[in-house]
Every structure is written in structure tokens, then in C-alpha cells.
Image 1 (tube, rainbow, N blue to C red):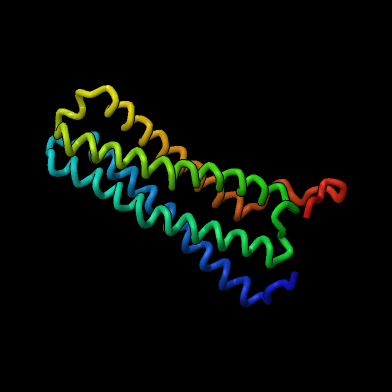
Image 2 (cartoon, rainbow, N blue to C red; image 1 turned 180 degrees about the vertical axis):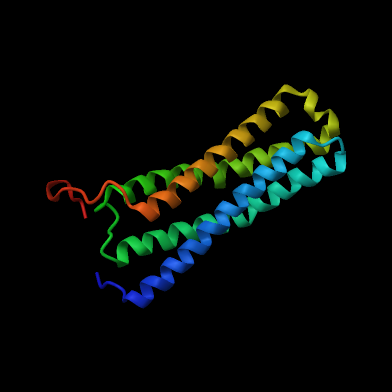
Length: 171
């Protein structure tokens, strides 16, 4: 396959970084909203936090995840990096699968569940064990997502572990 020029690579990398930054920023926003929801005494603030998280899960989380995934694959395929040539890329691919599960699936389901609980039970939602468990899952998911995305940023900068041996190459 034809490789792209250095200028094209830089533009694609810039777009990739922008999508990844949006994904990270949205996840930090989830953390702030989640902590605010857990510490508020206002039903309006509680509803606004979960509604905001759910709107972000339906929009920015999906768009930034898809954008990052597509640009990441293009960077691997259209440059000398390849999809499986380097251990650091393989680790990023595994972490990407984790991020898709946490972000696109988890954040959406947990925030929808929280919106539904709060809409029907109001502030009494905190008295339901299912709501408390959902919030714990949401918070753990957010923290794992931040760790996963942060790890991918570090790996992208340092590119540890090097290239796979010739006999191990799949690509």
C-alpha cells in the first residue's frame, strides 16, 4: 500500500491528537460531573449532572472515539508503523478496545441508568442499592478510562518496547 507524505502524516497525526484530546477532556468532564452529583444536595444539580453525562455519552464520547480509532488505524496502515510491527502499538490497540468498552458502551449505559433513576425517584434514588452500584460502576469506569487514555498518551510519546522481531511479524 502507498504510504503518505510527511506533511500528510503530520496532518493526520494532528487530527488524531485532537480527537484523543477531546476524548480525554470529555472523560475528565464525566469525573467532575460524577463527583458533583455525588456531593450535591440539589435535585436540579443532580439531574443536570446525569443529563449532561448522558448527552456527552451520546455525542462527544462516540464522535471522539470513532475519530480517534479511524485516524489511529489510518496512521498505522499509511505509515511505516503498521498495525502489528511494534509492541507499543499493540498495547495501544488493546487499550483502545478497553476505552471503547468503557466510553462508548459503559458511559452510555451507566449515565442512561442514572438519568432514569433520578427522573423517577428524584433524590431518593440514592436510597436504591441499584442506583448506588450504578454510580460506583460509573465512577470506576471513569477512573479506568482516564488511566487507559493517559497510558496511551504516555506510550505514544515514549514508544517503549520497540519493534517486534522479524520472526514475530504479522504485518
